[in-house]
Length: 258
Length: 236
Image 1 (cartoon, helix red, strand yellow):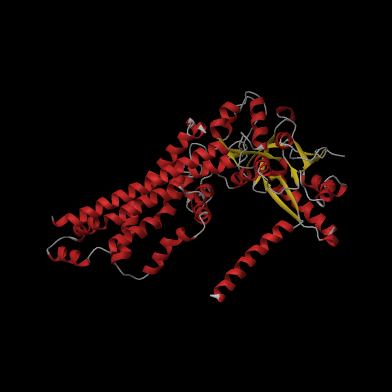
Image 2 (cartoon, one colour; image 1 turned 45 degrees about the vertical axis):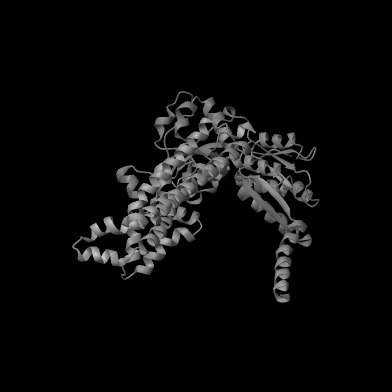
């Protein structure tokens, strides 16, 4: 009887220990748009290497900005949020979840039309061009209802009067990287992603760039989430530093903030 | 509260798609699964345990694994899919047919297991007796084995149907999450939870799923009892 009790107690204690660590950990949690996966991972690693003295640890979570905003709204432990459009940052601002005066418009990007490598097709980026006939199969991009790249895509397609003919061919994915992967695999014969995503992959090629005037300016706002740990401020500032800017530029992002 | 039962046309489409995929899934696997079950229950042959293990694999693997394997085999650039696309123009991604394939792979072991148990507990003496009286093996199967194994088979069919309704990992990995084509109930619930203001529609679909599952279980219970009664009263 004592033996069983002892086993039970030690099981409970060992289950409780990791939970204690989870609540006590002071890693910096960064929730960033999926298109920032590679660049933020690199900047985070750089920051960790430059700050080995304090043993700073950065934990990242990349997903569609809409999904991240939803998670933060539901109480996910984020310290820093970087969205791919101002809409989802504004959404959290309205819910009073972003610290006052911490929003910074950090980056810009370019919207491009891509195809699997070797399967490019001819296209004129003008109204009236029969885009639906230019390629067979599906066009992959983020869900136009909520994912930023999908929202920008819909704006551009509407501006070019291509939306109604392309809508039946559209596949809306949960984030921009899923759309990229589908084009890489050839399941989609065309896709709309950011230029920075197309550059990462050698299995897709850029067919055309969407004119900046055809969609709302692509802006990646950065903000500190309410309740962020104090050491998160260090990384938040680092994202606006020349070292971080250099990495952003290397990946093809436009740096907006000074 | 009332909005929890007001289903939008989009949600009814999701329900009908789920039912369509599940029904076709069961239709597609029923004959192969019952045949496999009979093989495993009645015959011994070289490689039997390998077959047994292969059949059970989808049941023990995380569903994304069979989904990924399907992608490697049947995706547009897949080993088999490449030829399907080049010569027949068949592409399964983003189609409800692909969703049926994903469900079929995941539901197959469930039907085989249940059918096998049903067939195994049929008294072999009855089958042998029928054969000594001159019945062809197929006739023995359809007149003796199958009717007596029916409760187990019915359980298996309903299990397979429910598994297909609940299939998520393999479906989303293999055919994606396309509204109207592959967005079955579980995928739809997931999609709604990823979007701000999606909680109420998600809850509606969750309630729907619960009702469907409950209905399936009660039906399975009723059919099993009926089949068992029928067997017991054979001599009356």
